Image (cartoon, rainbow, N blue to C red; front, side, top):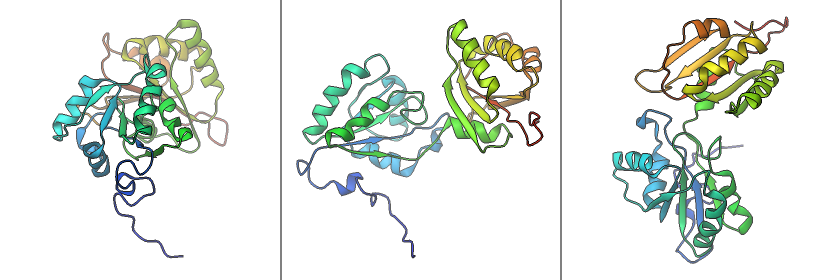
Length: 252
């Protein structure tokens, strides 16, 4: 079976395939954005962001930094975890009138521990939906850790409250696959303290400021990581928990 090279815009439901405005309901594109280095934006993402009628962004200030860097001048408005339930009907109405919108978050793929899932269900209203490939903190951390990447489990953010955090990490401790989670810098110490009790022998990789100038990957068991943890931690963080090997030991 021969395979032909697909050009940008040739995929079903892409902006180039929509035809004149008003032919059918509008369109939504989920556009991943760089997790740190702006050069990681894709050519297709730039093309879409320049063509849409509007851009819904998790943080309009951060969105404008990205858009300004690539000379993109499109209407931008907020769409975040605190307003998406109320905002989705309004956006659906606009797209049903034929408008074409893009959804971006602060970094990475919309809908992955970020707003996007609710709006993506616009397909149920007959609106075309595209998801572009692009930067992902999940897979970047998975590979930077040096642990076996297959199979792996992504479990989102570690909960903020102490009780839920302990329950969450004790469940992670029982998981034998490689596990990727997100954590905030000001909660990292508390997270590692629980991990030290829940899985003291399990290697963990702290992946901090990935793709940025001061990217840092530190690997060790929780006690070692705590001993070397600075008083103040900054930057975006992903934690990767090592899997068990075929002998039942934690991979090192």
